[in-house]
Image 1 (spheres, rainbow, N blue to C red):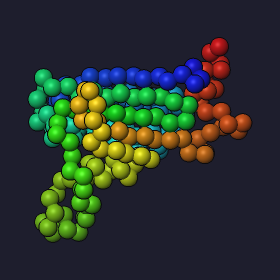
Image 2: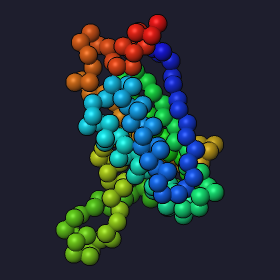
Image 3: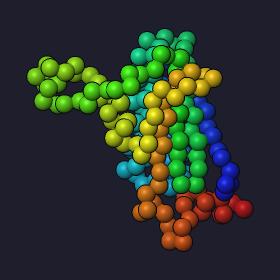
Image 4: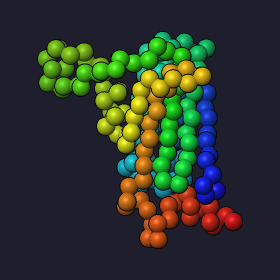
Length: 162
């Protein structure tokens, strides 16, 4: 299992509720890598936001259109690609301001991209692939997630299997 790239792919209809399938898969993958509970929940939130953005903004909740979620597991990180057939996102996104939102000066919605960027270690929007527009998120193990001797949960699990 070490030095082997492992990818899980999901195809989800663009219907609310299916983002939970991606959340659960991402959470399970993060646990395999060895992320602590708080980071697992950060990842689940970011994945849900990215999926809902794709379903709503790119596909207009057309259940016939699928959102592809690819989870690539490495020893010290997880890369999550959320793929849609939309036009992409604006390059510059206004940072939400709670006071302005409450005063009605900013749209009440619009927290998704901010949350994704805040919760993940690296985020790239508008990555193009043969499948469509990609939101790429990377979350890396933090030093406290790595066991003495440099072994991650994924490498410890692999060693115990064979």
